Image (cartoon, rainbow, N blue to C red; front, side, top):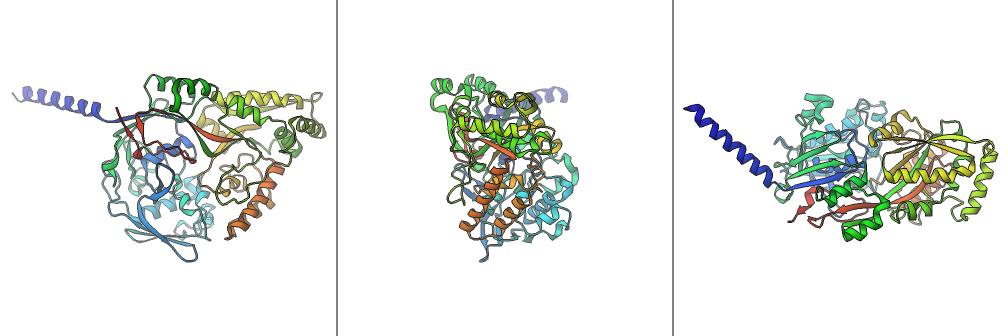
Length: 528
């Protein structure tokens, strides 16, 4: 009798669960690729930032329009000298397991990211915090960091010197908290779906590499009542055209990037579902200065000079990118007067080609004495077409190109860790609107992002001088001098300034184009 009763009960339970799953508001969202990691302290890719933004909440966050709004901190104050930030945490901030988010969680997290054993490639983002750099370099203990829990709801952060963009730094994934209990119990496995504890609008359900990452609404999130999307399925699309096909088939509601060769036809077919917006980023080629050929500044300048950036922007990228003759993109904050361009930027392309051929001859290369270089890029039609075009532009210099193509995570792992390349495609999207966020990339001790292995003590000294300057106009002048030195040395070849390229379904509400290209799912909804 008991068995006969259990079966209908179980059947009913399964039916109810299926109905609930079917009724959940689900957002199938295209992403740039699979993440290397879901440990926020080890992330470095834009694809990872999209995920972190949904899983976690920092002290402050970007809203739908990329304006800073309160996150875990409901309010904050700054000391008169600009070096002490006091954050008051909201009472209803909770982890997905129901535990309260307290100030000590941020102390634990900020110390963790600076601990050398963590291996955080992005740790230097938070070097403005007192003693952070010394701790990250193993010169001081983590408990000497300028972070203190005054009580459960009050966090105090002390800086080395005033940093006008410090709040923007805290919107970055490096400022996101990890759950101390989960990290202590599971170590590096705290990122596994069965172990992870998050404090954002969503919690992780599953991660199947190459297939999808599933998140569901975090009912313990303090603003859960306003979160209208119940479930997110992130689909990795390194082949942008595949995302477009699935978008047109109604299988995904947004694509995070587009194949530029299809922009014109997509606009004809899809109209204003194609979204092109200014983006704070630079597309560039890194030149490995530890390789014999690339160690010669004449070669580096010649390779940079001969590239027809207008052709790349108009023809390869279908007008979705702008020619770049400097590292720092236009429109950035705290850079009155703009950046420093290459001194040949105003020359005609023909004159540049002649000068480039002359420089290569002086370096011992040319059509009669050619050199072969490896050009590495991550798998994408856009990158392939760019690399093919540039290889043709380099032929008159006596440069033969061999291509090395990897997937996104393997490509960037090579750039950061092995640095096994001659020339490599890369891109940098500003984490905050300040020129320092681009110029710091090639500081000699920035091992995580100085792919070129550029070492110039004079450049480092200028960056240190700018960091100590509180007058923003004087600081801009110092940074401009550093950028001029960069353009003369050319460890990276700036190629194009980004636009964000997206496909957005008309059913997806709340997606606002913005210069940071941030789109937290919590601010969106789906209409039928």
